[in-house]
Amino acid sequence: MSVKAEEKWGTILAKWTPFFIITCTFLGAVLGSFLIYFFQGEFPYEVLIGGLIATIILTVIEVIKQKVKKDNLPEADERVIHNVFRFFAYASHIFLAILFIALAVFTLLGNESISILYLWIFFFSYVWIVGIGAFIIKRR
Image (cartoon, rainbow, N blue to C red):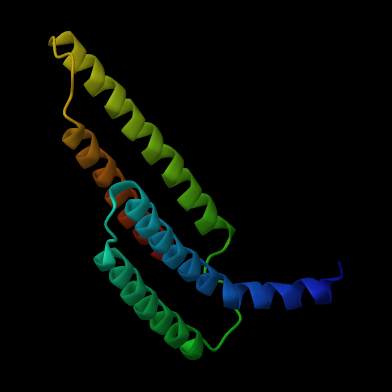
């Protein structure tokens, strides 16, 4: 592939990748709604409506962002990508270490079962912390 063709495809991909991500997110909400309908018997309209509203909001934000952007500079360079990758690697290892240490402590204390609620809280705190941290690192 020539340099000219790579530049052409690079600009096309840079423009349409966010819309592809937004579309896939909405398709995930639709798929999740249908799976809940098939397994539980009732269709969760609120999930579908929430996914549609989020898709519309994210699409409007992305269109405004692309209209305002005047230059061809990429969002992130190699250093930022490397820093975000390192942050994800460290954060996931730290959270896994905390999980295994907590499991060992619970086992030593004699608990044979752990409430699934605590695991969900731990999982969502991981997603929250890593998401906010990646956003901060990307902006620096």
